[in-house]
Amino acid sequence: MIKILGRSSSSNVQKVLWCAGELGLDVEHEPEYGSPFGNTDTAEYLALNPNGLVPTLVHDGFVLWESNPIVRYLAATFDAGGLWPNDPKTRAVADKWMEWHTTTLGEASFPAFFELVRKLPKERSQATIDASVAAAAPVFAIMEAALEGHDFMVGDGLTMADIAYGSTIHRWMNIAIERAPMPNVEAWYARMLKRPAYKKYVAIALT
Image (tube, rainbow, N blue to C red; front, top):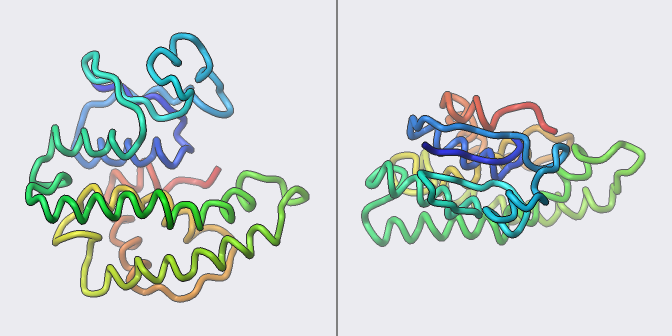
């Protein structure tokens, strides 16, 4: 049995759910962990994930936290040669894009989302939003260039690299900001929207 613990609105939980959905796995999702539910500071949960964060994966007694390692684990276990590239160089490139999302693109784009979606209008900082949009623009240009002539981030099919970007791109395309044209990124997003698991777990109302 595979359990995924974590609220549905978490981008990191969405990432793991989308991966599991693409793999057709029978998953028991327990969303009552994380804001606004709490439950991540209980002794029971902290025994699984001492960070008190989401998501947490439990697979037949094996416990794993951190979303990218969970995606890698599911991909390697259930779809070697697919979401998990067999070729070491291709897999390294997929790993590179996953880490770059965490350290660079996600960091640059998240503040604008947080201000516009997670805060009340009277609490928002326009300066923070503007700074995030400005910081994200050259970063998205790198993703735009990487997708030139490609339907996916790595190779000819969906890999774990694409999974890392799902929530961030959905959020960026649906917050009230001015975006520079990004035809390759926009085309990637349109392709993801045709995938049932992406629509179910990622392309949902922003909260």
